[in-house]
Image (tube, rainbow, N blue to C red; front, side, top):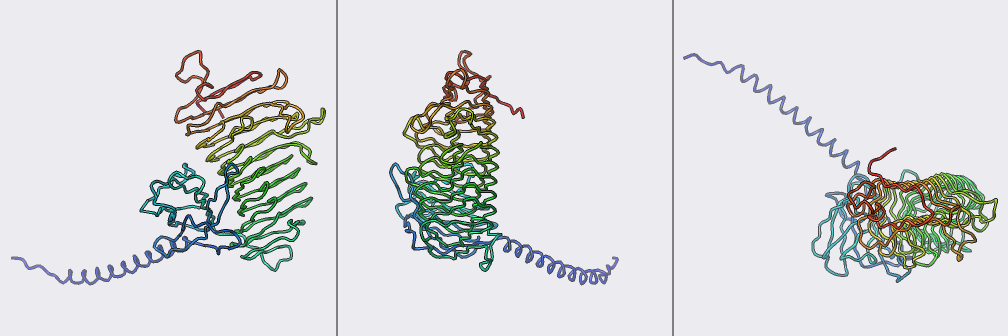
Length: 497
């Protein structure tokens, strides 16, 4: 029998062992680098609470990087709904990468839970009195236990700050963590000024920009119970960013006759009459982006002339936001204007895109409408686009209200008209909305050219050629009353732009 020479195998074996050893070190190196990069990507920042704002004991909220230690959040009291003021909760933090969230409900055992907006599709696990879930990007959430939307938890998260001003910069007003109260109640900012509230800072007082430009109002702090939030009048290039506004007596942001206003990533609660969210009067080139507004009056409104503000409103964009109208309208356009003949004003080129509306609740029949165009005082409203709007529920109210009207309580004359309004990808999944209204005023003050494209009502596509009796218009299936002095309404299935 032929002998087999194993010497080559021995040499190969030694070589292979060395290769395997080196490969193992390489694998371990890449595992270490990979894990290190993941750890570098995961960042979690929590801020100190302030006993200047009442604590709400309904929830205990903790966050952590997966596998890390839990960190406690401070649960602030946030008052909501002027109809019957309740104490909800609010907590906030910053992170990158991925975080785990633990929410303990102190009131009772958790029977059910809902995390909204529903479009985020955040799944959770319930165990006794604790709810857990994970987040992979910053967002603004309502955590609702056992169907309670008024004693809920508002959980807000941000990406870590990329802008922190120098406290020694003379152009900066830098407020550290802790409580700060403005003498006289109002802080007037000048040209080029930055007001910065660090995380954990609480400011009590109103902020005003009057005839100024290049002002920045920002930070991770809280503006608490001011008379008014931020007033921006006759100003240019103003940025309001990241702050939380807790229960102002009136509006959160009100801007008159200003240009290039940006309101980004703010959160707002109000629970008193006239507690509007963001009101724009005669503004041009304004951007509202990534906000969360839960207000006891109109959440976001675009108006023309009132008080000493004059002129048209145009080139306004509202996007990537969550709106919750405990009272009045979620979105309102067209109220207030210059009724003097020859001085009429126009609102045009306004876009609302990628918005979740969590609820609307308005008992007064004249002030209903999640998406409302109530046009008065000689105003002409045209070229308005609503796109990718998800309406979850309407407690008391309408999906749409497009009316040229003369409300003598707030106006001096009817509006001039509504023209070229485009609704695309609007969905509603509730059951309580009452009949929407589209109605002109007379043969001169008309509503013209209204397009609904891919309108979905409780999973049913509403369009002119849908399966229906021939004598019934598509508007009936959307529960929309089309009144007199209206022409050119279309319900489309396929995008045409």
